[in-house]
Length: 223
Image (cartoon, rainbow, N blue to C red):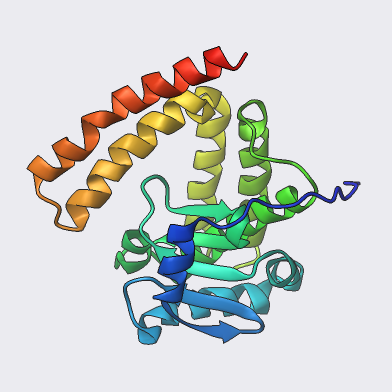
């Protein structure tokens, strides 16, 4: 059984606080559900997903209510969902939510997955590089267990099981270097999705290698 460790989460970044303040949202059973670019009417799929968890898995729902304060639809540079400790928030990529092929059941599974990250963080298990493969396996298994409770979910369960198997066979996907590459490539796609001209994207990306080298030099200097 996990023993709870008390630790202070990082403070929200200023940009996150600004975007939250400008987001549209409403509360459902104490959880704030919002979107940074849409309207409250756009949140219906998220509310339906949360209520689906409530209907079919009271345990997972109780954990969501306890461990999350927000479910926030925004633009993620990498991945479909993410847990942000500084906001106690499950972040969902707006392209994923808006995709007509994304089902309410898939969104519900993603929320369960990210709420599991929140629960592990609450017990002091941070998302360190050497632990990421094991942490993701736990989250995918929780997601799979929830999906098994849903009616007509055989295909959904198979998809989650394939993800679990693939990530277990490819632990290098969770290295810092791979994450950085994924965030850079995803950031470019996000900027293009927002209509940013390619010339401006190139101008933004040029300083990145210099910043990376500067950070390495600073780390070396402070050893």
